[in-house]
Image (cartoon, rainbow, N blue to C red; front, side, top):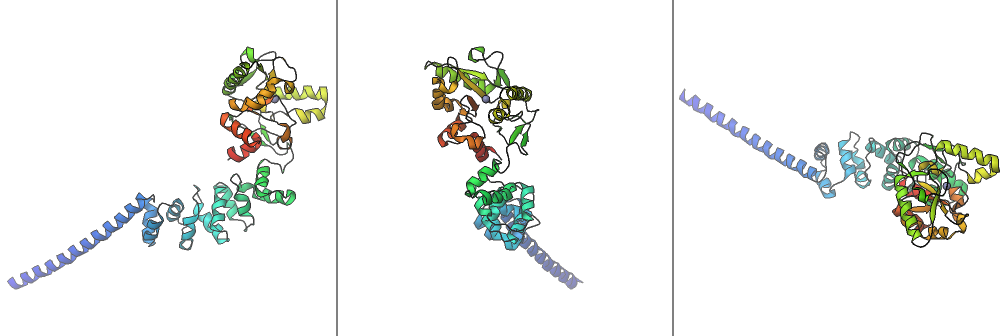
Length: 375
Ligand SMILES: [Zn+2]
């Protein structure tokens, strides 16, 4: 009896040792595992991505690479493909639902890592998904390297360049400005008020487009009968500008400001009766196409000289308007771009920073908008 008891004790002791050893190994393995997870998390990977990185035996590669959002998204995704690992590292991340599956599709079609980066950066998830499902196309790098290019316009770029033979940058700019369409053909309709809104012969304000912060311009600055309304910030900038001009003996005034959709309808009819269709087409904006409906533009006048272009105030405006955030919206040298004959009296408020840029680079607001504000 005694002997057997001792034997049992010995066996139990042995089991206990093995059990202890297993626990110890597990503790080491798990602490090793959790350390690695924490290390990956500390350099920007999610728990889920970190777990998949370890199980794919990519831990040391990823640690060497450091933070990489595309790689993180790939390891979070069911679409992760190990043969695309090096591409994920190089392709610039975009916050898109189908990012990894679209990257896989594009790589499979033979696009380079750089081309894939460009494609996914120039459109939203829908546009990229559509593009990833079509056959491989040429000139991706040529057009999509232009920072303001849009994936949805890709076919229009190709067609426009075939026709006009402009360089890629100009092609992208002009197509984004809808120069491949006739004036007033299939315009973009805008209903939400925005101080930076672009209105031209391709971009129409709906009759619902009404500015929400209109003020009446002080009577002393107005050269017309009745009330002239304008957006609040424009009024303030105009007062500053007119006061500065007045210190030099000049008298800047406003002859027209905000005009509603309905006001513009009336104006078109009046001019049509007076001067005919040709005049109206060249000088009068159709309803919804007038920048005056934005409440961000003004017709400026001189108190003493009837024709503004002949006044000292006009000369002063040419040199100084930008300092107060105003630009001559339809300059003589830019008639092909704006689609309007020069209007020496019509100024758009865009703020000092943009006005300075436009003046220094001798471009129009149409171009500025497409290059920097149209996302
Ligand atoms: Zn005007």
